[in-house]
Image (cartoon, rainbow, N blue to C red; front, top):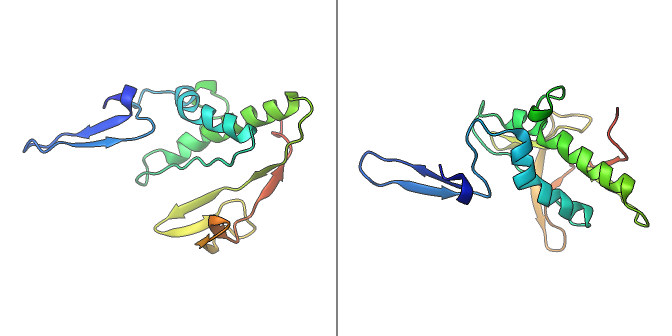
Amino acid sequence: MTPNVGQVTLLSGDGANKDFTFDGAYFMDSTGEQIYNDIVFPLVENVIEGYNGTVFAYGQTGSGKTFSMQGVDNLPAQRGVIPRAFDHIFTATATTENVKFLVHCSYLEIYNEEVRDLLGTDNKQKLEIKEHADRGVYVAGLSMHVCHDVPA
C-alpha cells in the first residue's frame, strides 16, 4: 500500500502485480478522524457551498463499511463519517451569517444488487436506480428527510 498516492498493489507470485488507485488508501491503524479529514472534510465543505455530496462505502461483507460510516459515538477517535459530517454541516449552518440552508438527508444500502432505503418507512422494500436526462442518476422512491440539527 502506498497511502500518499492512494494506491494499493496486489502482489502476484508470477510478477504480474496489479495496481489500484483510489481517492485514499489507509492502513488498518488509521483513525476515523484521519480518514474524515483527508477524504470527507473537503466534500462536506463543498456541500456547505451548495453542491450535492455523496460518500460511497464499498467492500466485502464484514470489511468495516458500517463501522467506518457509523463508528463508535463515545470514542472520539472512532466516530464514523456520518456523525462527523453531521456535526460539520450543522456547526457551519449555525455559525454562518446571512445565508439560509436547507439540508436533506438520505441513507441507502446496496447489497447483492438490491437497493434499500435505510431511513424509509419500509427498509425491506427494494428500490430501483433510474436515470433521467435532466435529473441524472437517482433512486426512485428514496426518502429525503429535512434535517435541522444533530439531536443531543
